[in-house]
Length: 183
Image 1 (cartoon, rainbow, N blue to C red):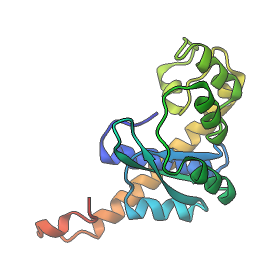
Image 2 (spheres, rainbow, N blue to C red):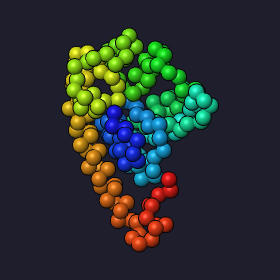
Image 3 (cartoon, one colour):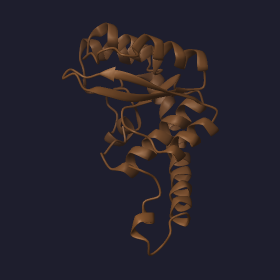
Image 4 (spheres, helix red, strand yellow):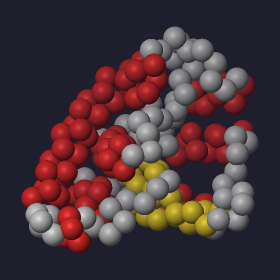
């Protein structure tokens, strides 16, 4: 996963996940951080249904997750199932359900339940492309890696274009206008 808690990296990750979902490599995708209006608009322009899902953390904090996918029915099903529910840990039933929703290979889901983060033979770069932990010797994951690489390259291009467009729309010399969107 790309997440290094910097806003630009998080935006890139959301666009990357959006492409994986738009290309139907992943059934659904989810981010657990706020998204700017232009990122939400891009996800919708990719043909994705985007839905906020309110969840409750262990400490009682209400958290909004953004869920998106190419199948509106599946996005709505996920929202109905998880809206207002507590965020559970690594319970096998939760891992399996999320694996199905987010398109993780079933062999990887079961391996993760048995032995989380077992050595899998992937390079750090290959594993870093994924949003699931690959099982040792996974054939399905090895077929996914080139698709993920192509989606990441496209996401970087889209993100760069979006960033340039934001810079063009800021008013230079005006500190109040130099932030294009509310935080």
